[in-house]
Image (tube, rainbow, N blue to C red; front, side, top):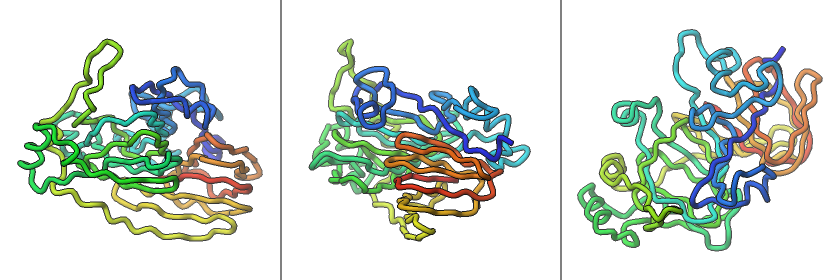
Length: 319
């Protein structure tokens, strides 16, 4: 039966002014242009739903599967919420705009969408000295507004250097930006609401600056900034080292490092899995599936247990 198979998904590629070519050179995706910034690799969002590549639902997208086959995700009867999570890989060939996202309440009341946006980043690769914007130095909302309207960005914005393997949790209300030379895997609420605070006065091909959303940004930003305190734990299951990176209200995210064999029961409503490096096999009820870098899939509720064998690095998440 279909519910006892993984659901393999086709990434949706998105052009961005700051994008590059690493989604092709590193992950071998067919990119639409040399400014491809995002691969929405596990997505049911209307702005880029992933298409299912196998099984009885082949050709349908993840949003349709969620709506029509809720049993795959242990969705309870009468639950009319949208699919809750979205996973992306981002290639920042240039600095992303400085931005902030609203929480659920603001998103619903002001934007009329189901989810705000809390997110987290796993740094896949970073050039020497690459930086993120994470937070700000204002102590009050009035000071934040004053510094932003004066354009005192160097004084206002807090910058953090990162390297491959770093993990950053970004709750809604956090001013942030991914810097040039960084590739990340992002796990987030299924939301596309972004308030742009600052965009380096860049212009598009037509010479137009991108829209800023300063008033709403100031409304939703957490003041003063405080770094999220996340507790991380490490567990060994057979030859798999599982590092829990964050366990919060909206999602739990793990880093898996497999070097050999590992078998385990399925204990979640569903698991989202992205292969970042290496090769492995996934075995479910005597069915064997080949895994390699750039493959993304969901283990649905019907699976009772599964085993992995090989050498691979994976990012895994669930609600």
